[in-house]
Amino acid sequence: MNSVFEVQKTIREILLKVLDHHSLEQLNKIPSGFSNNLIWNIAHCISSQQVLIYKLSGLPTLVSEEFIAKYRKGTKPEGNVSQAEVDEIRSFLLTTLDQTVKDFEDTLFVNYNEYTTSLGFTLKNINGALDFNNYHEGIHTGIIMSIRKFV
Image (cartoon, rainbow, N blue to C red; front, side, top):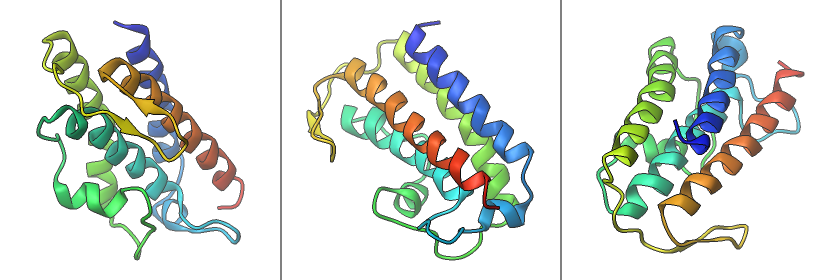
């Protein structure tokens, strides 16, 4: 497995452990001083990965447009998520990574629409997008580790 996917797999395993070790109430709690919660950050990683990797490559996403819209950049939790939604997010952590690896190996990512992130980094191709996605998921994993201390 390509090292970029090994890094993402490690991040996703950390996120799965967060789901395993926190109650539904804890996942939904927005601590004072934060604008979102554990479950939003985890789902946001999935939503962003789909946009950065699939949408910008001109390919259909592996999750619904509604899911992407609910957790995209600039959104925040609009109420508690159910256990069923947590279970769906849990499955997306694994299935989206596995399918991305397969699609990468099958060379599905031929085109890429250049995109400049809000941090000013320009993504020019799938490799840059995969690298940046890991950086992005790492940032949110750090935020998750901070939130955990307050729930």
